[in-house]
Amino acid sequence: MPRTRTTTVRDLRNSNRARALWELYLNGPLTRQEVGTAAGVSPATVSNLIGELLEQGVVIEVGLEDSNGGRPRGVLQVNPEYGFVIGVDVGETAFLVELFDLNMRVRASHVSTTEVARLEPEDAVAHVLEGIESVLEQSGVGREQILGVGVGVPGLVEHGEDAVVHGQSVGWDAVPFGAMLRRGLSLPLLIDNGAKTLGQAEKWFGAARACDDAVIVLLGIGVGTCIISNGELYRGATSSAGEWGHTTVMVDGRPCRCGALGCLEAYVGAGAIVARYDELKRRRVTVKPHELEDRVAAIVRAGSTDKSAARVLNETATYLGAGIADLVNLFNPERVVVGGWLGQLLGDSLLPQIHQAAARHALRLPFSHVSILKAQLGKDAVALGAATLPIASVLSSGAVAAEQKPARPRLPDLGRATG
Image 1 (cartoon, rainbow, N blue to C red):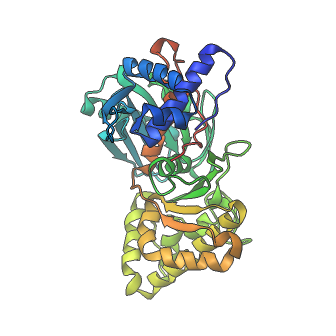
Image 2: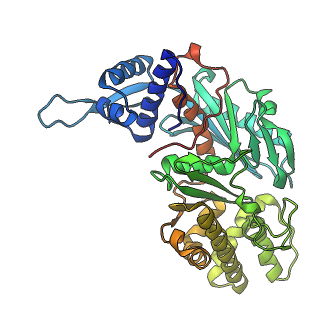
């Protein structure tokens, strides 16, 4: 749960509301007593703030707790229809836009694709805005009911007003993506790196839930991580932490899209897997980005009958295991969660090999305390995680009344989401 600095009576009130809402959202349904205990507030305080939240419609009663003879106590949860949020996954070949209620139930979804060789910012903006209009129309939800839009992007994000994106691998050099979107969007907007939004989704709802030290890995065309340390999302000095795909696994090795040589992404990214397979087959094939998922899926299916496919998959598992061993040695996590569309494809068949390779390369003590798991959430995990950005903003504000809300919520620190 994000920490809030309190300086006035109003600050203290909003801080108490925020703590109560975080507990209800992540751990509910709860009784008033359970909310007060978890949030660390007195019975009188919790009674007052729950009364306010009920009156405002942020919280609803959903039943009564079973009683052993005493007076039954009401059970509370965050109202799933207090507002709605939109989550966007800006991929390199496809754009997923989903509209959720606060139970994270998908109310509308829109997918669009591009066949361009390199993602253009203007094209991405057009796809995102088109998707937002589509899900609003499909769902019948009014703009005034939208609490915010969260967007996951393939690049490093400077969290200022313009949300400048540095996507070296996709050719985005200091692109003011937030400013570009706001020209056609009047809703509150929050933008973050796609690996971080995927990690946030797995931390709140998936395989990293109830874990204070975890690394969530995104495998796709690109490769990245979300690092959770002591319950907090670790960002680094410029919010660039987690660019695991651009750590060097081979000095002067294969060329990477970022311009360097020997990056992990050049050995385990989707493009690298397909290129290696074609190299072993001694053929030159031009593969467009939107074709990569089908090509990798075919290689995985052929792994038991095609020697070249088996060799590529074995090499991929070895490099992934070595890379995960580095994460284990550096961050000492309890869990490493392997996600992303490529992680979903590789996970079922390669996870035992990846685990064995990681064991060979990691230090024994930290490795003895880590679990390597497949992500629990599906292909929409980046969009789902992006939708948690505005939710976290509302929870952290204590869901203050509309007249008190800032027009553009500041991006909260999303790491402390205790499960």
